[in-house]
Image (cartoon, rainbow, N blue to C red; front, top):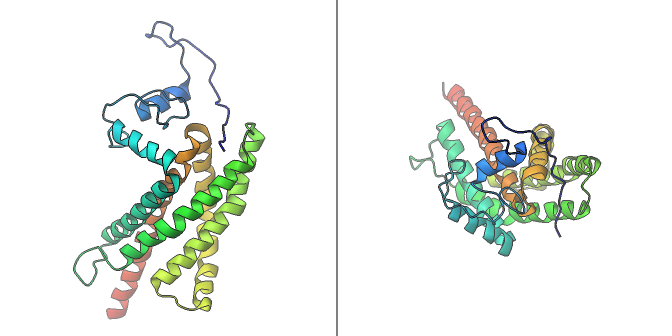
Length: 248
């Protein structure tokens, strides 16, 4: 089931120096980012260019292969993507915070646990929820429908995902009882939701405009990776500062 949104265009005007050729600004930006014109979205598989993509650091062929896997094996590809990003997030946050483990490097026992969370919890949940969200608004292309989709995402989808995230992080951090997990959720829910309410509308609006539906979950994973890395690194820094004050 696909969701297609009407593409807003800018009034056609000739661009000086291009012999009066007409352009659509959003189309031009997307073409520069992805290395070619597409039929289903700016990251769709129909790109034919094979040049190196400076925006992503990947060759067009690699990008095409990844997007093809998203179409043919969507859940498996999302699981591998989310698991890899979650593990990398933990390593990168440790490096930023200079949180060296007992073994003397930044790869700690949380890394495989984060990978498992990303692959077996975050990705399937995101795949399921986003699929429902897209199905709910299938064929509805008006501005009102887009706004309603953003509201449903922020008021229904985001709370579910953030609750599962906080519960999973509590278990990874060592919580073993229901009361410990509940306390973690109650303490972190509103701070995490405030971040979601700022970032999620922007990310979803971008996805509505520029991305084919099969790329939404990986795109949201990348957004979550950036935000999660920053939050994780700040948490590690505060923990290290508290330990230093205690020792001192």
